Image (cartoon, rainbow, N blue to C red):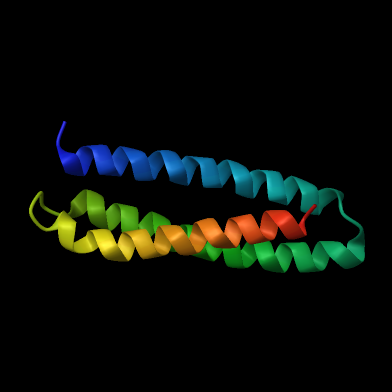
Length: 95
């Protein structure tokens, strides 16, 4: 397995975890009171947008050549860090 393939698998696993976390947050939002629910859904919409951006970065990585993927790595890591922090922040507010 190449370094690129291993990196892709790692990112995909993290993306899958974040998808599960988004599902949990959506479930909490569904059970929240109406006035709080609106705020939760706004936050989820932002998180979903960041998740979609991270998914696009992963697609770019998958399509990159074995030589070019290293150049994409820093942009991907920035998107991943941003999404990870946003999910942690949202999860703490949803408690």
